[in-house]
Image (cartoon, rainbow, N blue to C red; front, side):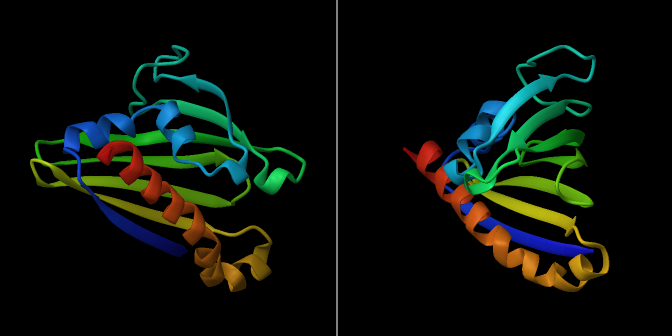
Length: 161
């Protein structure tokens, strides 16, 4: 299994950073334009469409078309865990359908002070392509770096302003 990690300090309270990341709108705001993301549907754990918050059991159906190259790729994520404490919070999503044989993304948020939060992304993934994808797996992190750099820059820009 390949692992990619990245973190950023955000000058905003944990509660604001956590709330921002708890919706499909947050996902769209943090995805670079070149990914051409489109949220097709969101469902809460009880099947309710468009929940206010994505809690454990929620499903997000989206599609992407990187760099505008067809066809559009379906990406279905299930929020499998979500925990919130006084100084720390986390949620984990697992790709149920999409371009990777395995994708598990753990988002961790830790209050460093009343006004500063550490955002940490931990992704466990496998590249497509069977044995060739496994061999190239360590290089997959190079492709993820621009995406997560953008996500973290946007998080800072949108929440520190």
